[in-house]
Amino acid sequence: MSRILQLSLRHINSVTKYPNQATNELLKNCARANSNKTRTNSDDLFQEFTDWETLNKKKTVSKAMKAYLERAREHDDFMKKQEFEFTVGKRHLANMMGEDPETFTQKDVDRAIEYLFPSGIYDPAARPLMKPPEEVFPARKAAEFDEAGRPHHFLFYTGRPNFFKLLYDASEHIQNIYKFEDKVIRKKAIPDPNAKLELTSSVWYSKEELEQHLVENITELEYENFKLVMERLVSLPYSYRSKEFIEKVRKPIASQKFALEIPKPSYDEEGREYITTYECLRKKARGDVTIRSPGSGKITINGKDITYFADTQSREQVTFPLLFTGMEDRVDVECNIEGGGPSGQAGAIRWGIAWGLRSFVDKSMIDSMQVAGLLTRDPRKRERKKPGQPGARKKPTWKRR
Amino acid sequence: MRNSLYVFHKLCVNITPGRWPSLLLQNRLYAKYFPDFFQNPIFRKEDQAKLIENNELSKYTTVPVLPPSASETSMHFDPLVNKVINHIMKDGNKKLARSLLEKAFENVKRKQIERYHLAKTPEQKAKIELDPKNILHKAVENSKPMLQLLPIKRGGITYQVPGPITEHRSLFLAIKWLLEATTEKERTVHFPEQFAWEIMDAANNTGKVVKRKQDLHRLCEANRAYAHYRWQ
Image (tube, rainbow over all chains, first blue to last red; front, side):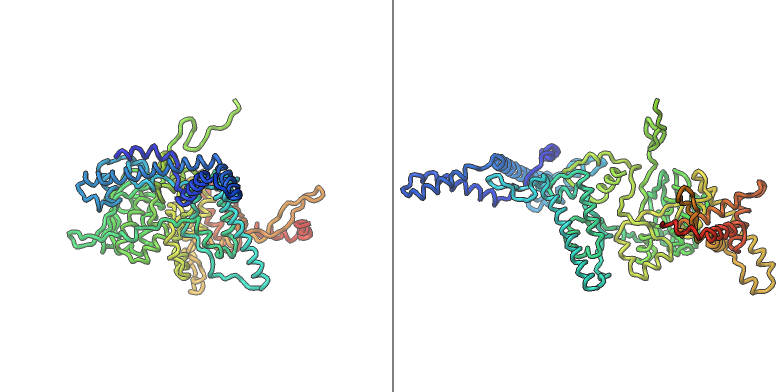
C-alpha cells in the first residue's frame, strides 16, 4: 500500500530503461582489463606492450560513463525494489480482498483500489492508483556514448538527437518525394488519385505524446516546427510514399462508442414502446425526454405543446431531429425541462430527442445523424466573469493614466 | 484557447497514469472548446445525399462532429437567407432581424398570391413564383454585379479602373445594395414592407438595385480605356 504514496513522489524522478547487454559488455571489458593487469609480469615483451596499451585504453573510461553506470545501477536496484514491492503488495491486496493471489490480475487490482480508497477527486489522474512500475515510471534513454565518452548519435550535440533526427528524416522524405515527382513529370504520368493519404481519422501526437515517443523534452517552438514540417510533408501529392513514416507520429482519434450501446425500448401500460433519456443538458438547462412509438407526432414540453417556445428558432431546434429522421408523425415526445433560457432548453431537448430516436431508427440513419452532429453533446457553459475586468475576456479600455 | 484545447484533449483521449500535468488541474467546464479535429456537421439532406452517392458517409462517421449551432441549422436552413438575416442584424439581435425578414417574406407571399388570383389564364398563373425564398434568391442573383471599379493612382491622378469581381464580394454588394435601397424610404413605411417591394422588383429585373448594378456596368464600360492600369 505504501507504494501508492510513493508513486506521487517518485514520478518526479525520471527513470531509465538500460540495455542490459551494453552494461554487461562494459563490465566484461573492465574484468578483462583487471585480468590483464595481473599478467603484466609476462616474459613476452610484445605481449606486455599490448597489455599496457589495453590497460591505458581502459583507464580512459570517461567520467560521464562512470556516472552513467552508477545511475544505471541505482535505477536497476530501484526498479527491482519497486517490482518486488508491487508483487508483494498485490498479493497482500488479493488476500485482503479474499481472492486467490495467483490469479489476481491488474483489473482486479484497479477494482480493489477503487473499492478500498473511494475517491471523489474529479480528475481521474489524481485518484489513488496501483500500477506495475514500468507503467508508472516513464522510460528514459540508454547510454548515448561509449566508454571513451564519444557519442553514438551523429546529432548528439544538438541536445535532442531523437527530435532532430525526426526532422532530418522528414526533410529527407520531402526531398525523396520531390525527386519522385520530377521523375513522374519527366515520364508525363499523372498521380494516382486512389493512392491518397487518409488522415481524417488520426491526429498528430500532442507535445506530451511526442515527448514520450522520443524520450526527450522539447520546447513549444520545437513542437510547432515539428508540426510545420510534417504538414508540409503531408501536403505533397506523393506523400503516400512516406505513409509509414507519417503514421509513426500520428494517433487515431478515439472512435465513437455510442453505436454499440443503443438501449432497447421498454413497454408502457398501453403497450407502446418508449425510451427515456435522462440528463439532457445544454447551457444551464437540464431535463429528460421520453419518446413513445407508435405515435402521432405530439410534442409535450412541461405539459404544453410546442408553443412553449415563443421564438421560431427554438421550435425549429426541437423539430430538427424529428424532421431529419422522418419520424415526425410516427412518435410522440414528452419532455420535462428546467433551468436556462429558451435556446438552452431547446438545445437540450434536441439532443434528448436525437439520443432517444436511436432506438427507433436503423443503422444508416444513426450514421447520418452522427454526421449531422445531432448525437454530439455540447458541453460548453457560460464562462464566468473575472475580477478586474468587465467580462469573461473583455478588458477595460487602455488608459495612460 | 490553446490551453483549454489541451485540457479537453487530455480528458477526452487519454490520461497517462503517473503524470499529473498542472494543466489538468486547471480544468473548467466553461473553458471547453472543441479540438481542431472535430469536423463541421453536414446536416442538409442534399449534402448528405452527395456523401452517400460518393460512399464517403462511412468515412465521416469515424470522425467526431461538432454539434450544429442553434441559429444556423435546422431542416429549413438556407445559407443565403441566413446571410441576409446577418446583414439585417444590428447589435447581435438576430431574433429581431429574423422576424423582420419573415415579415417581408409574408408580404411577398401575400402580394404574389394576390397576383396569382388576379391572373386569368393558367399559363399566367404558372409563371407566378409563390415561394418568397426563391424570389429572394432570384433578386440577389439579379443584383450581383459582374465588374467593379478599383481606384488606382497613376502619376498623381486616381483612376477608376474596371476589373473583375470575386463571387464573395459580388454577393456582399448585392445584399448591401438591396438593404441600402430599402432604407431609402419614407418614415411611415416599415422595413418589411419596403424590403418586400425591393426584392420583388429585383427578382423582376427592375427597380433601384438593378439600375444601380447597370450603372456600375456602364461606368466600367466607359472607363475601359483605363483597364491597363490594373497591371501597368
